[in-house]
Amino acid sequence: MPTMNKLCADVAAAVRANADALTELDRAIGDGDHGANLRRGFDAVAALGAELDAMPPGQALQKAGMTLVMKVGGASGPLYGSLLMGIGKSLAGAANPAPAGGTPSPSEIAEALRAGIDMVRQRGKSDAGDKTMLDVLIPVCEALDEGVSQSLPIPRLLDELGAAAARGLESTRALRARKGRASFLGERSIGHLDPGAGSGRIIIDALCASLRGTS
Image (tube, rainbow, N blue to C red; front, side):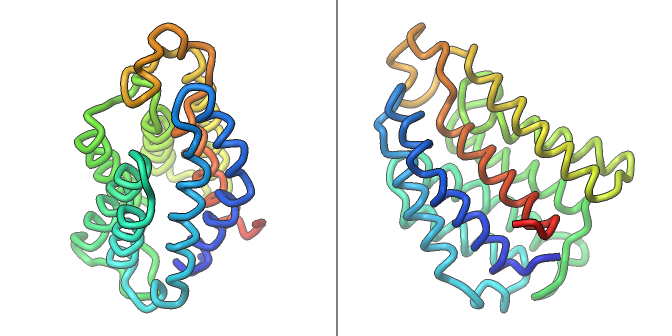
């Protein structure tokens, strides 16, 4: 299992590599700053370095989430920050929370992801079908729940998560935006991929690659 520092560094590298593509997605239906904002935020998280490894996973994710809230402008910082803080709070509150350097169980991770998604729902007042990051995160969470219930081997489970993220992103093309600046475009938002869903897929893919040890 990669360290928390390694996971965050790998996500930051993926966001950095795809920042221009995310900006292009956002330029079509938003403010055109999604890639730059996320790059700044995840670079700040990666800069925490070994400090994250010295914390239990739940505490480290809450720290990372708060960093995103403080460093990222627009809606994406509070939303991704809420996601990480919700996941971290759930992991910290588990019956036997993993210590620094420890690894939560797959079932704990699944429960924590649901908690993080609930915080995103509350913060963004949004849900599946609104053309947001949730259109990636919710299918990924469902795939994780299903994989854990079937006790899938980790490589197969990671494949399922990646596939769910890809399908979720593509599903946003046909959706009309109902939240954020894109919602002002009405029907004209249809036919475009949502940038928040785009960054969601990039992050999920980066995490899966890091967990496979192929990043």
